[in-house]
Image 1 (cartoon, rainbow, N blue to C red):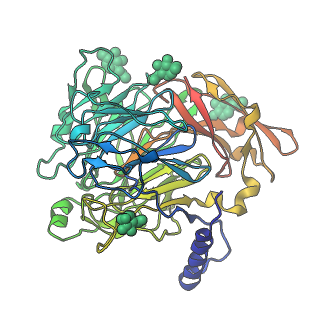
Image 2: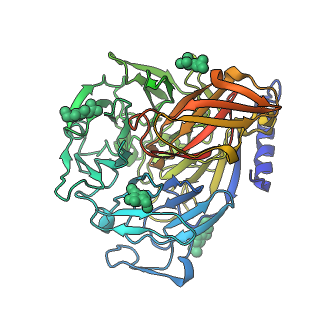
Amino acid sequence: MIISTSHVYYHLLFGLLLLHYAPPACPAAASYWTLLLPTIGISAMHMQLLPNDRIVIFDRTDFGSSNISLPAGKCRFDQNDMVLKLDCTAHSVEYDVSSNTLRPLMVLTDVWCSSGALDSNGSLVQIGGYNDGDHAVRVYRSCDKCDWEEMPSGLIQRRWYATSHILPDGRQIVIGGRRQFNYEFFPKTSPSEKAQSLPFLVQTYDRWIENNLYPFVFLHTDGNLFIFANTHAILFNYTDNKVVKTYPEIPGGDPRNYPSSGSAVLLPMRIVQDIVAVVEVLVCGGAPKGAYTNAKHGKFDGALDTCGRIMISDPNPQWVMETMPMGRVMGDMLLLPNGDVLVINGGSSGTAGWEHGRNPVLEPVIYKPDNSIGYRFEVQNPSIIPRMYHSTAVLVRDGRVIVGGSNPHEKYTFTNVLYPTELRLEAFSPSYLDPSSSGLRPEILASVFRTQFEYGEQMVIQFTVHDQVDMNLVLVTMVAPSFNTHSFSMNQRLLVLGGGNTTKIIGTSYYEVVVTAPPTGNVSPVGYYLLFVVHQGIPSEGIWVHLE
Ligand SMILES: *[C@@H]1O[C@H](CO)[C@@H](O)[C@H](O)[C@H]1NC(C)=O
Ligand SMILES: *[C@@H]1O[C@H](CO)[C@@H](O)[C@H](O)[C@H]1NC(C)=O
Ligand SMILES: *[C@@H]1O[C@H](CO)[C@@H](O)[C@H](O)[C@H]1NC(C)=O
Ligand SMILES: *[C@@H]1O[C@H](CO)[C@@H](O)[C@H](O)[C@H]1NC(C)=O
């Protein structure tokens, strides 16, 4: 854990606020914020955690000069760049979580508003962008000296604001993008492979607002894709281009995708005897219908405070609506290792898009999916930094959430605006990281743990816990590292592999739990995952495992 003066400062600040407004009956475990770096030189618009605990971060190459130089006097000459053809600053960095340090990287073409996924080897395969980068596929294989590798014509169609999702065979599907009502795969299985049309994206589109960008896409455990755009959702067979099922419309009639920018997650999936019986999606927040047009005219509508939850595996699925403690647009929803959902970042009025958001929501909210309705949301301690349009958040191995970005302006703008371009990197520590929980926290014995698994294989995990263990409250979870941008974490999924009834004591404070690796690629595509042992809601540090 990183101890900093700002950590102390934040604690003091909250202490004062709490004393002033709502003194707690007893000191409960509390969430807290830490300022990690006062500047990373760029605005964290896209983030992906890599299996070596580094985060690759990038914004866009046509922003002009950033606040971090390229390494070793390098410069980038791009005759297509509309702002700065010769640019000696970086627009991508690699952040090392454990040392809290940065390394500038050189990306050659414009990566603005793009998508991506980790491939089965743990490299980021990033898709598209803008201008000279809109057909590009770029690979970032992390190492001490590695840099971006580019395939300028990796895509058939331009992909700007598209959604990527990893498939069971390790390829990624790329869906939509601005004025792209179709999808394609990367890599291609043959040079003649074409983009396929997707009329659903036409049906959910409004050409004045371009309002179904970055659709929410999840791989259902039956092998089809759940695709949500604005208020509609389908189950889609991408192999034969068929809509398998049309879900009911989310109640309320308000759009949830860019620029309305709510967020969505596939809720934690419990595997029991190789079967996931219940698969659910949760969509939260966004902006009401008409908000984008209103924001253009200086009227900033209050954000949606509703979430819709739907069991996509049910033969007769219905939305169940819930109310958040406050409205939120441009929030990010992240799955935490203990199965809670974090809703973080964003504002309470306006929409996504330049200068269109207002009233930052500084308090994250935790949603506990297993509690009964009305007892699911818990408001967390606030940050002091607004994270509006173009902000990001990713879970890291130690259970913290790294938060960066916010730049609601067309260029880097540091003065004379409501929400200046934000270069600070912070960490949000959920209350499970409060030192008062340390006695309950499991520690996985990494030295006796194999990290390579095949589908359906037995996993034997040994761990220690200082305090007494309640065997019934042990869980083993596995989280896929997601690609975060524009309020959506692509490829995010969490599997509950089992726990309690297969946990046994093997020595003083030593335990062993035996679980089974996920059964198929439909349940969890090939690649890297973070595995956690969770005890009474307190997760261990994660261990990287590779599933194949
Ligand atoms: C970024 O660099 C510009 C130009 O040097 C400077 O004015 C600005 O204060 C810097 N911003 C931050 C947040 O470091
Ligand atoms: C992963 O690495 C292996 C071994 O280097 C290589 O054969 C394979 O093509 C790589 N896979 C991908 C998706 O890059
Ligand atoms: C999709 O359709 C193809 C062709 O009919 C079929 O082989 C495949 O099993 C279907 N996929 C799923 C996930 O049902
Ligand atoms: C543990 O519980 C699961 C789910 O109820 C069950 O399928 C499994 O057989 C149990 N395992 C043991 C060893 O009792």
